[in-house]
Length: 123
Image (cartoon, rainbow, N blue to C red; front, side, top):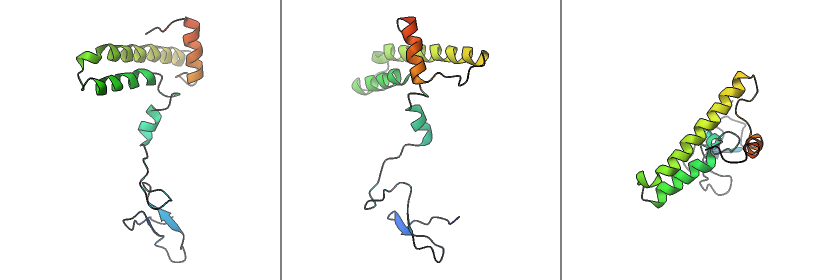
């Protein structure tokens, strides 16, 4: 496999002779070398509702911090909701793992069914 060499502008040619096709630096788009935002894999996984069951609580606490000038005391209720959410879904995951259910973390649709069966938010 050819090694990618950047020309500094996100465009260039393959360094091997006979390979004239252009290639792009991973952080540049195919249109005019403009930068595109790409999240790292870990960040993308944490933003995936099938992976992170407490995405809404996490976003609410982050938004609260931004709105209250990063005063932790004024956002303590949001932090508590997030902590309780993580505890609840962690206990569900442990129970499913003990019962041999795959995957251990329920998908977003399964979590909606679980919460609907409970009737109210357990956290």
